[in-house]
Image (tube, rainbow, N blue to C red; front, side):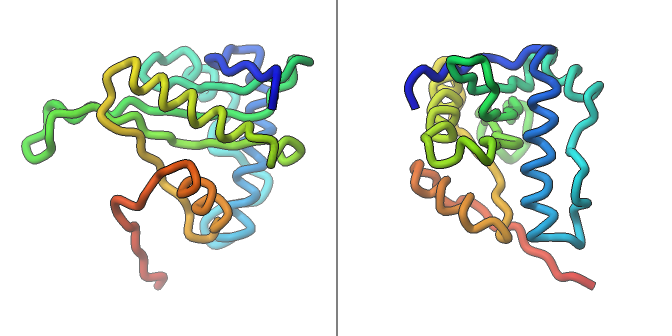
Length: 159
């Protein structure tokens, strides 16, 4: 998609980000209604404002030429340098990534992901990681297409 700008999220972006948080939550609620509540969001607007202000948790947003927010990538700095058993590395964890339903298929997610990679390289991170829900195979396929590979499995037994 041409004319797209990727930048850090700002306080005026909160309402648009909240709408996207609902979209991604509803995808999860559809796949795992035993875990997610349809119509809810992962963060409140106040929590989101605090995250936006936190440099260790950058949120990148994709904005089109009309100023419409089309997607986001929530990131978290994970510093393993004080661990007893892990290599002393820093990981940039993608906590959440979403592209507005109306903008999917237009490479917005790819551009966001590539921006996250560029940010991670520029800031000396060892790797970029994320979790994908098994109930969202389209997301898993997208991440694999971007070059990601499985490095651990999360498993459960429902009681």
